[in-house]
Amino acid sequence: MDTQLLRTFVTVAEAQGFSAAAKLLHRTQSAVSLQVKRLEDQMGDALLERTRRTVTLTNAGRRLLPYARHILKLEDEAKQEMGADHQGELIRLGISEEQATTYLPQLLKRFCTRYPQVRLEITCGVSSRMVDSFQEGLLDVVLAIRHTPTQTGQLIGVESLVWAAGKGVSIAGWNPLPLALNPEGCVYRAHAVAALGLAGLRWNVRFTSYSPTGLNLPVQSGLALTIKTPRSLPEGCRIVEEHEGLPPLGQVEIELHRSPSYSSEAYEAFCADLEDVVTGAESFASLEDLAEKYEEEASPSP
Image (cartoon, rainbow, N blue to C red; front, side, top):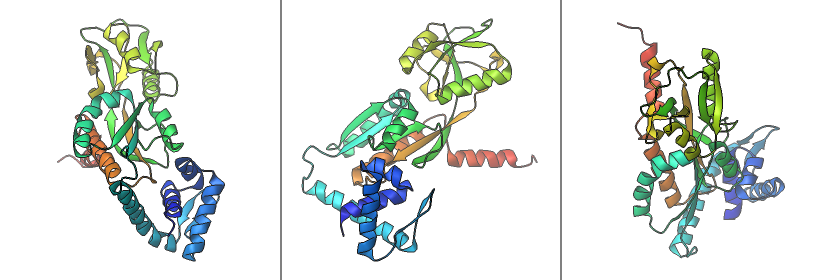
């Protein structure tokens, strides 16, 4: 079997579409369609059912998929064993700066000890931009705050949002409330604006920056409020308490984007380590924790 055709088939199946697969494989959509057709000709059966909006596996496609994944994994392992990549395997990670500061120290120590030959290329930026880069095939794995549903994002849990002010700074009498926020399009900003609007409080965005440092400095100086998760609260800042009169902010969803065309042992281990480090963090609620919480809240009191 032609492993290039198998890799294209696996990517289309897991991305659930030819357009998404084409971006991940750095090929045109017509080239991807042609490769799938060639594989179907070799197999003597249709592997994918195409409609205007979705792509699903046929019975033959479902039978072939686990074998295709295994063949590709063996090919990657053989290349590594024979020294096909003398520089070492490269994994390209996309992550926000705050998540990088929180999770990478533990992740890098844990992963690099077991896979010292693997190279990591780390890109920090706004979650929505990292997801766009991933879907264009420029990144191999992304940890992101969910902005909109995607075909590639795996929901792994949620985190609570909190108001943050400078340590020792009183917000009493701030009217309007001075805010330090990311530019338009940030889900944190959307939560803040919605909460303040529902509460009928006056506010203005006094500081705007894509960089956490650009937001943290005015907050640490007592000049503004910002939005954080408890685990990303910077030094010199405090969580604003409920009795201080600010509305609750709710939660954000955390998702992991994994490339369906990447199948090495090191890559699987890296993704598993990243998920373990994130979901094991203090203040982070796993999907199982949430389900248990909702069940308790729904149960009648004795």
